[in-house]
Image (cartoon, rainbow, N blue to C red):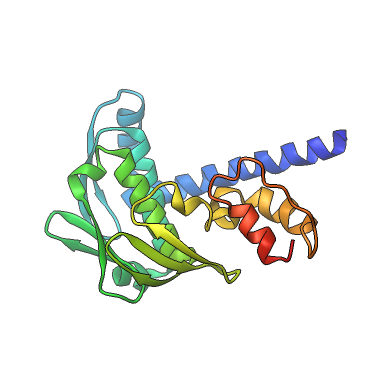
Length: 212
């Protein structure tokens, strides 16, 4: 039992270190070396700062540390896709930052000013970027997105919902360790699987897909 706990603890520590390295790279990529000066001012002295973000050279005023970090991670996801990808999916319309969803011309727009002040707006932007990267967006209407994940499951996602993305993104972002190191290994065809406190049913739906 001790070995199991030790292995889980080491895995968690490695994931934490990996996330910190990715956050550092995200900040450096999105804001350049200026973040080394401006991040302490924002996070420690709580002084609002203006930062010109790359790769789209957008000047945003940040009022808190969390929005700066989350937005940098959002940009970094696009940079990792390749330089042609963020120009394909991300556009500036007047004073708004817009994401082109799927293959449609439909745009998900967020006010640039609120991105620097409202963590919920940044989380919404980040979640939409994750959907674009990790899923196939099949159709878009006024209120919802129809997406398909790599395991062949279709999901209806409310636009700009911070809750709905957790189930389809569960193997990639929400709980990758739990999913790949535990769920995938124990749930087979005819397995009896009980999802207690299912919320959106991310595990239960996948268990059913496996024939559980």
